[in-house]
Length: 237
Ligand code: URA
Image 1 (cartoon, rainbow, N blue to C red):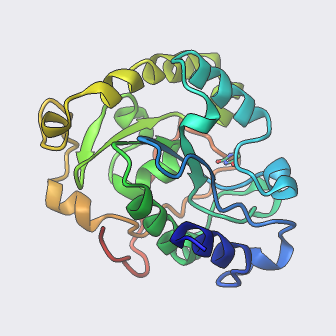
Image 2: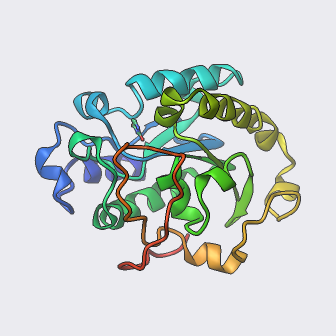
């Protein structure tokens, strides 16, 4: 059994938070475990919970269209979520749930060691850059621990708002270039954007506490993602 298989099994039998009690299936992740590009969403929805596979519902269909527009297929990428179990009624993740699930994501990132991570929506973006709203960060590739992070709007938000869909499509067009960039150039800093925090602060924010603000519309990426003064900090890559 590979380390990855062991991790998937741990996720499937995880009882670290209360979401485990109501799940049909945990959703560890899917795709190429050696992919150059990894996508991180928020948490499984109804169909994902039924099938144990991320992004198989409507948001997943839009994601597939976006991937096709840049000649990528699902089998070319690795995709997972911050939460591996479905929150009831697709509500936003709670800080305690994100904290409990964080180490799984951290291990996935370490094992895949992707060149580029695309964060889908405000919650997964806040994992890396908690102080700025997604509306400010989207479409701006940033360097984080030698990985290029590209924040984009969540496909579910894009399904509800045509402007966000256009922005999502535009932001996806950057992915091939980010994957093509010379390794040595890419793994240092310029020409990537720098958010208003320092590199050190950003590293310390890895899997740091998460937004608590409740948004009546799940995945409403128009809203900023406020940082929370919250519980523990996870270990760094
Ligand atoms: N939204 C997510 O964030 N993840 C999924 O797997 C499906 C919808």
